[in-house]
Length: 237
Image (tube, rainbow, N blue to C red; front, side):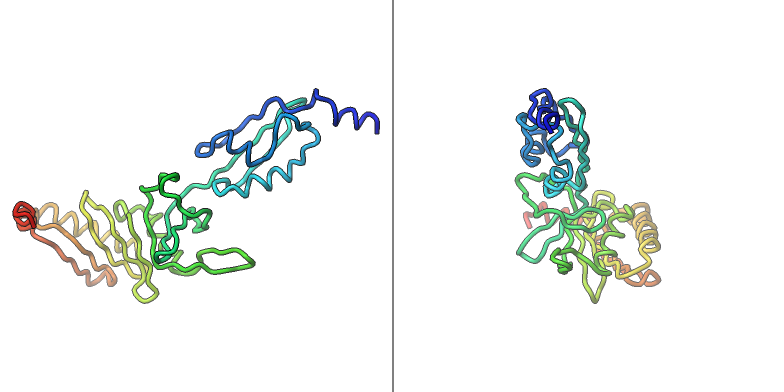
């Protein structure tokens, strides 16, 4: 008991160095403050499990691993959340999700710097065992379309229980709306690419505005006249 008390009270084992790994978005000061560790703590007296639980409550921390570097150091390895999209719930909130569809924080536009992420509308939060998550077929379809990387740079996804998935995207640097429905997304992406290439080569004065790919065998395309658009813009309309 005397030896144990001596070790636990000895300043020789007080924390002098904390090494961080894996943190890109969160700075060292913020992580240390969240862990509630300071230089007065004895390395051997720290409950690593408790520190780990504190850290994973930070919205940007997906997982944390802590080990002692005796006599006076700690190494904290952080696995940060990777933002994949923003789910907009009517005019109530905007929630950041990862690529599994898990919500991990409410968007703070002035702090998070996530303007490049696509926005998804039409999903609903479901409660399960005290946690709120996005679930269901519409979520899976929206994630699948975004993960395919076949429809240009998608910046908006609308999920509808009757019409399926619709997107707004930049394709060949043009804003295009695509109605995709519920299935056959790879086939529909191929059809859209074929039609877009045909317009680019053969209908250079026409600009595609909408693809209706709900039925890939009967694709509807809306286009607009580039010259007419140019003249309207020039005229101040």
